[in-house]
Amino acid sequence: MLFAVAVVCVVLTALWGGSPAGNRSLEPEKAAAYIGSTPGLFIVDLRTQREYSLAHIAGAVNIPIQEFYQRMGEIPPGRPVLLYCGFGVRSAYASKVLKKERKGLGKVKYIKGRPVFP
Image (cartoon, rainbow, N blue to C red; front, top):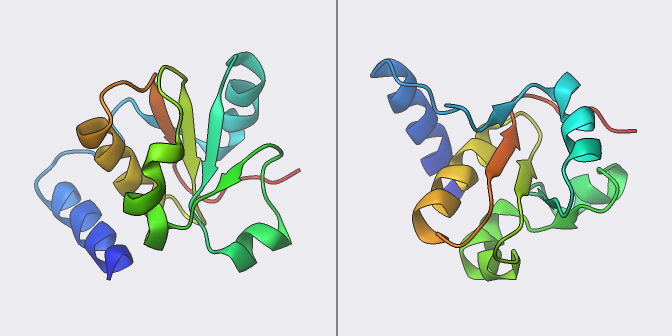
């Protein structure tokens, strides 16, 4: 259900001419440089536990999108955050939720598209 809501949000935003990415998105190729140059970065993998177990970015915390509302309090305040999922839809949605619900966080960015795993 939450995934369906995320898809609807992205589609409606695109239809209205806005960009769900804004300045919060990172192309997959630039994410590694951002990770390496951002001290204190808290990385969140929004994919399922199975997807996470197959491959993930080193140091990422797995908070599946289905559990995001209940667990977003685990993201520490004051630190920059990088979200990612399989294609960028879940992470775009989660970045909007964090911007609205968690004002004390540092800069929130997400990987737009399929992340590149080491």
